[in-house]
Amino acid sequence: MQEGLREEGEFRYVEAGEGPVVVFLHGLFGALSNFEETFAHFSKRYRVVIPMLPLYTMPMLNTNVGALAEHLHRFILYKGWDQVTLLGNS
Image 1 (cartoon, rainbow, N blue to C red):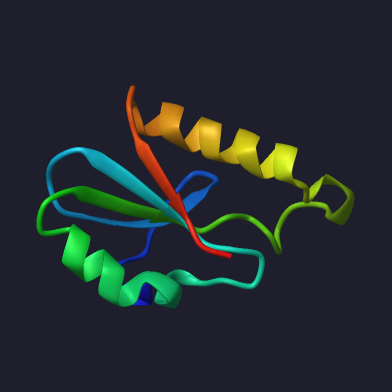
Image 2: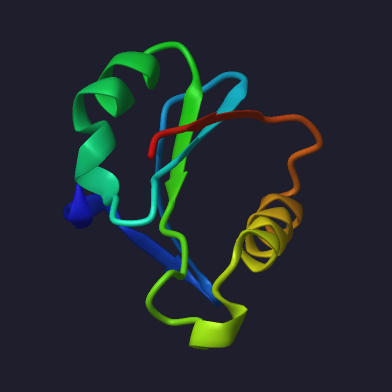
């Protein structure tokens, strides 16, 4: 999945499909590959997006749920979406 990785400003993500937006969130030690089959399946009917959470690039003291939620919020605003469905795996 790394071959489809987009980098825009502070955001890195993969995106495919058309329709309602579904955002997959990986866990602490997760990666894009966690969702490879799921991504392929759901992108047939939805716009599926997997942002790479900045777990290793944020300052250690700021790497917490609140900071990651804020990063995700900025990403959603950046993309201009007003409604998304979030799915997570940890």
